[in-house]
Image (cartoon, rainbow, N blue to C red; front, side):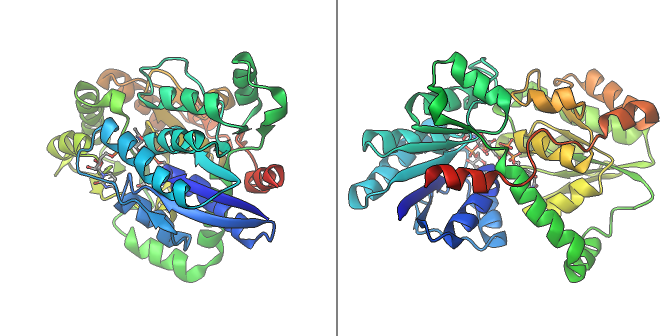
Length: 371
Ligand code: UD1
Ligand code: UDP
């Protein structure tokens, strides 16, 4: 029996690891322990509750307005304490957060093999996304097995001299999570009904633009510009409604609430649990976001995403046509949104449902390779 320790701390890591943890717990080949750092508190707990995952260890690290060094030092030390007490065959980390990088480094210092899920993504710009590009490159240097979502991830790692035998192309586990949740929404009438009621303020006859944002590179002027673009969209298209679950980071909340509170047709919400958020994506006309996970989910749902960044490590979604980079200029965001709202031909070209990130079977592939 292989003993696995999953280490994670933020919303997207929890969503993307939940299907792997659930499958591993059911699999007699594995003994599973879960360590959450609590880098996020509420947004992490929302996901743990949905998937009924009860952590074995909780470092409960989050502080309001925490610095990157607060997180990294706390995670290294907290994971260290657990690894001094207990032996594991693998520590599993996901993606590119500070939790993932510091958890992997802590395991490396204990000579515990690190398995990296969602490896191989690159912009090759250490400042964008910041600090995630550095985090993922550091994890690559010390991981013993690399689970890449797509072929381009494999090529990125080969170019950095990672040995081909320790790279596995698996698809992205976010699609496993998305399909589980979509099935629940489609098949469980009571859940569907309660979601309709919860979002009864959304008019099904009007186009809905769903918005999220949180990237550190966009803090300050960029966030103000993004919010001004949203205000102009709401003012110019009274038949369009905007739904924006605002990230809990104070750097994001301040400009969003200052510029958009009370604007007609703009619904500012608290961060949504994953199930209602998937319902919102399913019912949106288009999405404006800087989220990594949403760029991967949208192609499955056939929803165009205007990405408020200047680069992306999700090049497959751009190639598939679903994702378009629009940066953080208010004028550009407004013009691109206007085009999608008014030009059905352009819209339909982007609303493709072929997903390069997988078919919901990534978790099984990962577990087979770990056995
Ligand atoms: C983090 C990750 C980022 C990931 C994002 C997903 C790093 C450096 N950043 O960014 O890669 O894309 O999560 O959302 O690892 N807060 C709360 N409650 C919560 C969550 C956050 O109050 O449940 C507030 C706190 O004030 C916290 C702040 O948000 O200090 C920032 O959280 P942090 O995890 O440092 O950064 P994110 O911007 O969320
Ligand atoms: N998401 C959610 N509730 C929200 C906004 C996003 O459940 O209110 C989901 C979204 O579907 C995706 C993930 O959270 O799976 C993305 O998280 P985030 O944008 O915070 O991080 P990133 O993917 O950019 O690292």
